[in-house]
Image (cartoon, rainbow, N blue to C red; front, side, top):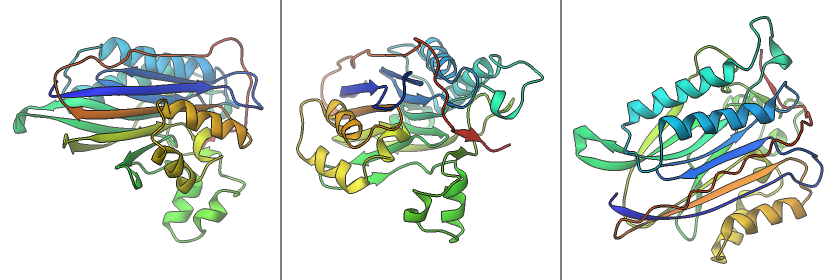
Amino acid sequence: MTSRVEVSARSDTGAVRHVNEDSYLAQDPVFVVADGMGGHARGDVASRTAVESLARTLPAGATPTPEEVITAIDEANAAVRALSDAEETGAAVAGTTLTGVVRVRVPERAAEEWMVVNVGDSRVYGWDGRQLSRLTVDHSAVQELVDAGLISPEQAAVHPERNVITRALGAEDFVDTDSELLPETGRQTFLICSDGLTRELGDETIAELLAGDPDDPAAVLVEAAVAAGGHDNVTVIVVESRPGDDAPAAVDTRDRLAGRELDDTQPRE
């Protein structure tokens, strides 16, 4: 690897839920958050299955191509899909979001780059020390309404269909993954989070907390979201890449599988 990566990662059940249905993988080259679809069978198992599949197909120290990353996500989708019986549909289907960044090699450019991937309504942001910029688009019913100009982002936050997502691993036999390649350019910071963070804290508040340059930014953000209400599970990974000698990133995958509490997140049928 041409850059040194530092990682801060934290997951919390929140103040309301009894089970954490989020999982994450923070193991160079893969940094992803999976938010199991609560209100569905085995949402916690679905998120864990997704990250475990990626950990197998994209192991620590690997240098995958973008095509290999998409193939790995397809395999994770198949693994989550296998959790549901053939006759199960709608709310009975196990599913999960999957969002994050992967360090990839791009042979045609003889370069390493960051690959942003997204399925669902978890998010990836870029942080330049002053400004927070969203790098993913939510796959949700309310985002489609916002994009169509029918409602405002403020209305989307309280819309009755705000929990309806339009893409998820496990929902269909084939998954359509959004992806984007970003060149490695000097110091780069990515914030990856489940919607438990963004439903409690606005982008301005998140930026203010990051601007304080905390030693453990993921912990600071998660604690702030829980203090603000913590109505959902909250998971955050902050990845900082700097030019320098090769150094392995922290390996820190935490899953919660102590039981199951269902909420009302639903995929659109």
